Length: 120
Image (tube, rainbow, N blue to C red; front, side):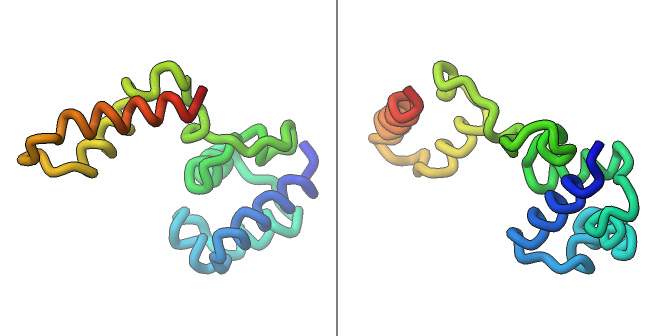
């Protein structure tokens, strides 16, 4: 592991989210001086800390460790053929429409078809 790459990625993610070290320490339940030591390559993060960063910023641990330059996390991982069957997407679509509307089902179907077409 390259401590400098990890430090740079940790700092860049935090700064791009416009978070101070103090605010991020609250969000991740990690002491602020420890975040500073990660960002200056003094300490290497433990496995649980890597997971906290990866989940919080939705990036892969491989990205944090410098094994890839592609930050894609869980939210990026989708199969365009099954987007209409994605429970999170269905929940989102349900929130978008009034269930009492007579055209509700047609609107939902149209949106799901558009989503599928846009991913192809």
